[in-house]
Amino acid sequence: MGYVKKELPSEDKQELLGLIEDYRQELVPLIVPPTLVQHYLRRHAAPGWVWEQVYLNPYPEEPMVRNHVWEVHNAKLAKASQWRSAFLVT
Image (cartoon, rainbow, N blue to C red; front, side):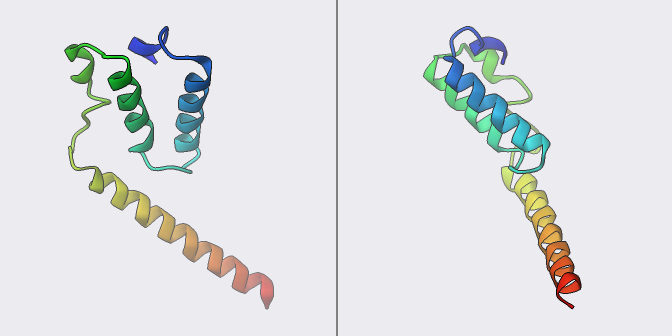
């Protein structure tokens, strides 16, 4: 959690750790945890050097690239789920 570790209430820490775990389990897209971190950093007035961290400014800058990968992943999961349903029904 770095810079805001000592500033965040335990509820906020648990929320962030939960989202990181959700990303690890592929339940949320990559953009979700850094977005929450950015929210906390704005709320706690983080200095400029913090905002230069690669995690907060990943390349490519366009988040739609990462979201597209997430959408493709979800489409594959949906197709697999449909296949399983069809297989189990017949």
